[in-house]
Length: 449
Ligand code: PHE
Image (cartoon, rainbow, N blue to C red):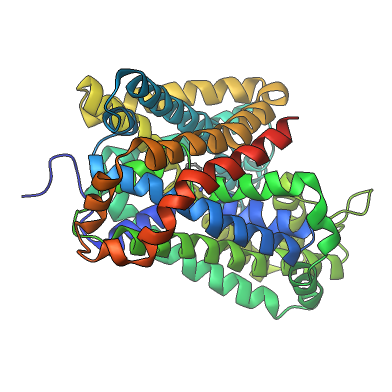
């Protein structure tokens, strides 16, 4: 009989779901543009180092705590300590995680809605439905609100299906499509004139940028955002993982897919920008830096597709469908965090929990849409730049200091009797106890002062 809490049916299903959570707008949009404006390969190297040294151990902390407790984030962190005050800290951290996951979803759904709008606009325009096609890519309030609601509707529909029939099934369908589309698009763009200059901007390191103070916090924030850390998404996915799986191994596979796709996306976005440049589309801002963020995705790339005639329509549709898929497999993991909490702690059915949380987050998203100028950037900064790393520190403290070492080792031995003599056990406990909290703390502290 299947587990009443829900459990991934297969290892591949878990890896695709967890990689689906990790691979999102952060990888395909955020990473390449940050790399471009922060010294190309210099940023890439910093990012890779932070990802392996800090983010992978933090990912393992979440997966291990989740798999050990088989509980939602609040109950999981509360159940690790033996004493009262630490239990309260666990509850506080868990609630912090689910609030932050909801905040991230509230802005993510708006951006993902734009992706849906662009994805639908190109084929509609080609079919002659010009008016709707143009409306879908204007940034006015009703369109932003409507598309956000459509995207939230899709997220809710998947999460309603539960772990196996919702999250796992859709990740298995969508992730291969995402990877195939990304490879096909990069391969095509690399054949176009100008692509080489993009490759140079991406791969030639400019080490002078490495010394800038903002770079570390940006790269750390990117790595944490990209691996979906701190907010309990990996913890909850870990909690649905069977005791038979070797966590250090599947965790490494998830991290490698995530990092690999971010790096691969660099081979699409940067060359595409320089192809656009070769075709006369402006790609630099007035101070000589590369255009990035919203201008890149919604101005530069559409202008590039425009220069390509009918193949441009296919490429544009494929690109925005790719972005929408990446966003959906991430948003379902964010919604699952509060949903699992409501089901397990407050006895709600999955149906009620999903609709209730989905509606609250959609209402908050609408508030952001209505007060875009003042709220949008603020919510992003609070949740991703500070919330995620700070919660990440607390989770590392729980894994490294609060969780008893013998219990931890027992967890690892569930599927690997020789865990005590393995490399992971010799390195990871030290990392998660000392290095992660201290280094993450220093970087966050520096960025605040
Ligand atoms: N990892 C996702 C991305 O790269 C974002 C995310 C953050 C997902 C936090 C879940 C939790 O876009």
